Image (tube, rainbow, N blue to C red):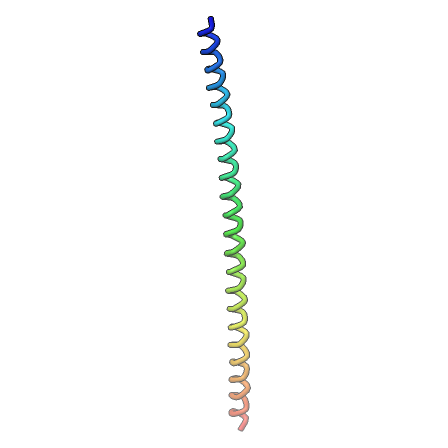
Length: 82
């Protein structure tokens, strides 16, 4: 009978260990999923910020080009009036 008690004890210990490991792995999966989601959001925000900077640079270049074209048109108008 002592042998059956030891077997029951070891069996319960193994079951408890298995449950513990399953819980740890489930928790690790949740942490990994959350980390991936967080990194994806951070990556998207960084890309959006970079895109915004690039768009702002393009707007500035377009504005400068427009100013240069306006000056060229003004010079052209002056030369045709003469």
